[in-house]
Length: 404
Image (cartoon, rainbow, N blue to C red; front, side, top):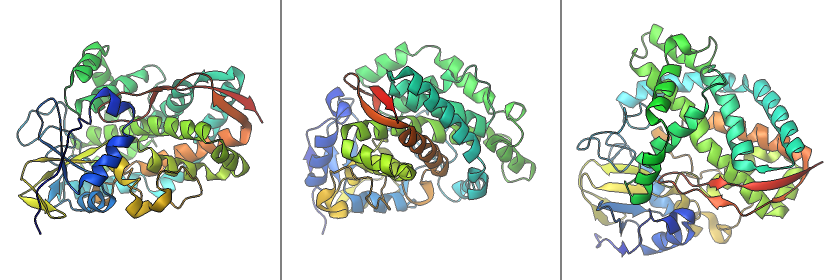
């Protein structure tokens, strides 16, 4: 039966909601399967936050399109702010060949080959953190590790200039959301965006990737005729971002939850091999990607609620990942022993995060090493939440640690 779309008088892009979207998530689930939300920039947004509905839309690439933009812009009607991503902003059949190449590049065998270098980097980083004792974990822990290991794995980029990846990430994820006054200020004050974009673009060229790196494997697919010369840099860039952008904030979110839940930190210390499980539970409990957008290919219904062709659908995985209908009465609890199989933090279907195996290896290596060698951890100040249109996390996370 078709029903009228409910509405929430909540703008999901205000500073208060960005700082803590928990109440928005709860009210979104309660309001209905597809809900009109207030957006001060005049956008026509429909939000979806129940597990069943988010899960079904993620899997339905024929009716709910990525190719019209994974952000608020409709790439069929609006001017894109960058070249559309080959993985995230294409649908089958164009998406299929590219995804096949990526699956070969990040095969289990290739990812396992990274473990030794990731472990050496984790050992070095924890040595340094134990010397510091008190530090900003956002910068020294969550940013430092991916910025060291992922550019090495993907392209062999020089140490100098890797900070450009952070500026590029801010530009990308702010631009995927509405141009609110806050977002405009951030983008206007971001230093040398064009230089950061150029550095990332140049680092992905054939002549700049290290032999044996993931980037080199992507360029080998060009030589086999599986990709074009134009597609390869885009795909290298996509893999680079998948291992850095969201992973940085997911590592910080995981550490914050462990400090906030000392019983779970004690469990991880007793079983340091559960680093990956702690990471996945953090992804479920405090999902880093605030929303993904889809565009209906035609007039459709979401669980009986009508949506129009071209209307932007805002999928909210953080709301779905704490839906009691899926996760039971303990949905709001942080529990690293939970079976997190099926959480939606990394998407689902053909557009599920391609870099997930690399991100999980990063997290497993760093968190397990940290838990083995660190006895105590506590906040050394008040964490500052990240205000970003797309990513949830921390802009500052001061902690103090003691050695095991």
